Length: 471
Picture (cartoon, rainbow, N blue to C red):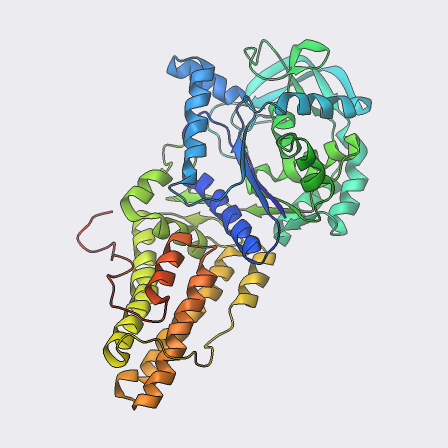
């Protein structure tokens, strides 16, 4: 499986919304690797946006300096968030990106033409709108633009896209987003501008082949990263031959990924992705978390304060498949204390203590399994439902804690106690396996606490975050 995230602009440091998509992609990658499947997980940054140029001007620093600094912050999320991506592309620095964009441009030359255009441009979205305000909530007024651009005959691909998406060959999930794309297609497609004047772009970006007065539209440039990052045999392996090519994207960029990108590929005669999973937004006090809104929660700061397990678990356990999720630190703390400290941590601690006290630490044979979670987890992730998948893992925690209360091993005879504790130890070991894609650090601690042939009492696996600290 080839798993990709969107590549964000680097006009500022990453926020929690970026962490959501990265963690979701990481869970998919770890899950499928654990099942023995070959996986390539790719992410990166979109360095060539006008937003980056304007941010550098506002900061009074060279564009390259700002881009390099912020791109490093995005790549640096790997450690704090326990990410396992295989490759990270920067569109201004990857050696294969510019020549790859040029190849895609030339391959679509039969659908490209120039004409004069006038419209209202949102720098935040990097696209034109017929009227304001920006539908995605960017507060800066739309800018009137009048210039000659290159255009792509998007209108030519309406029927093909309706057939691909409506027939399920290009899967768009969830259904509400698929229906949104189909409605957009049925309303008809206009050709789109795919270049900007080099003057308006301040000379930053990839020049249009054969027309240095224009730079390639940043979305055309950025979307190509899914293939340009695949050098040499990687392209054949992961784009031409791979049966499952999955894009994870936010709802604000669905049109680019489910309409513009497949149309570009159809025009160029290249294979298409197979699935596009669309997540909704994280909000704070009902407003979308974004770099420009002033409410951007820093994921690294949150990890420093509460730990990676608490941050990843809130993103996976609380964010619904459909609908925005409102974030507060208090909710993060409450979820971690309830599930991690009170649920999983308490379970593992009780089991280890009872084995040490009643069986001198010797692990008894495995008992009957408490709950089957592997298949429900897999089915949920096949539906791109991370909250349901995390909930399936948590059913095993709930079943095991319930089993402790029902059987009361401390009141059983020797044989009954061994059977009960054998069941509980192996339930905890199963939890370590099933939890790994979601919380790799926590899973490793659980495995260490209940592994081997003898158990010893250990320190609590998870601190109670709400005790003695203010969010």
